Image (cartoon, rainbow, N blue to C red; front, side, top):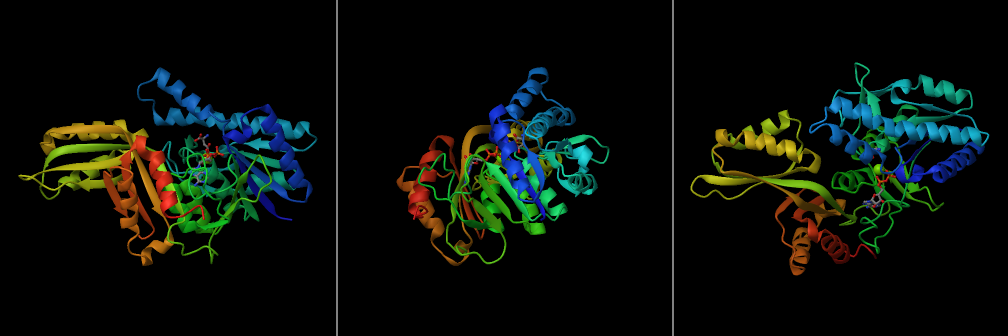
Amino acid sequence: MGIIVQKFGGTSVADAQRVRNVAERILYTQSKGHQMVIVVSAPAGKTDELLALAKGVAKKPTAREVDMLLATGEQISIALLAMAINDLGGKAISLTAAQVGIKTDNSHRKAKITEVASTRILSELAKGQVVIVAGFQGVNSQNDITTLGRGGSDTTAVALAAALKADMCEIYTDVDGVYTADPRLVPEAKKLKEISYEEMLEMASLGAKVLHLRAVELGKKYNVPIHVRSSFNENPGTIVRGGELMEQGKIVVGVAHDTKISKLTISKVKDNPGVAAKIFARLAEAGVNVDMIVQGASKEGLADISFTVNKEDAALAHDVATGMMQELSAQTVDRDDHKAKVSIIGTGMITNPGVAAKMFNALAEKGINIEMISTSDINISTVIPESEVEKAVVTLHNVFELDK
Ligand code: ADP
Ligand code: ASP
Ligand code: MG
């Protein structure tokens, strides 16, 4: 039988007992005749702990060294899991990204995989080994360690599944699938049997961290179905795949939220051609990903420009914008870290007018102020105060009857 790639997230390998449980589960599947390639994340909390260490020694730790440090988290898990499997009488070998040959571009902390070598993995599989690969890491053209962005182990798994032409890619996590909203926020959320790559891409990019965005992109590109399921039970999970889906065309399939955003406002900028271009070019040069942008109505030739960025980029974005104040003759640059984005997602929205109005009405009725809006064919996003997130997500889940 063919190759199965399984990825176990941080909570699944958080302590010795869980590592042993995962080891048993892997050996059970192997005993059915499969060749097993396993990707693991750092134990839960480890990556945050390492980031805190970096902040303890440097105000702005250099990205290359942060990657060197963060990659050690995954190395703990691969070594421990291999030991546990060997101890249970199985055969396992742990490998770092460098040992496998997972190549990335040079952008430290958000590197993209460019190539995955399969020779080493295939030769270990041929010896009957369970091959355990460190998630989240890669090496660039100079063989320096890079990392793929928070949550990136999912992407390692899908990239390996594509390169090895695996029969299956399973993502084991602490929920038993993809739900209509984060089940931690909405207890009535329903598990989806399946979801299209397109809708999952939107969910992931709008904050549903159950799958890393790049993992879904690679799944779509190489047509790898991704099965999201729980490490703690045997329940069938959610299949993310292409082709015709039973539930396709639903107006709204899910609600996503993202509290990891910051809103910046540059006030009283001269409303001249080229001003926005200048601001956003400078931010891009600095490596800041800008998400939503709103320019307020111009008054006496002056306008406010607001935009959102990932919280991790907020300090840098603020520095860049502040550095341009004179050049723009702007009055102030404000940064607000207490905002959140709440979005609804569904491919059926294209053909159903009135969805946006229904969403905004529902939020208004609960007294939730919408500060920014963006829409596409398959999502509508709003920026609201962070304190209102739970109320907003629950309200939208109700209004669009996602529990039905
Ligand atoms: P892992 O460490 O296994 O990679 P993550 O914490 O990255 O796990 O992702 C799983 C978490 O994603 C869940 O615990 C859940 O709170 C969150 N989540 C957010 N949105 C959703 C959703 N729509 N469906 C399922 N889980 C979601
Ligand atoms: N350990 C990394 C993180 O916490 C990668 C991952 O868990 O997927 O972001
Ligand atoms: Mg994750």
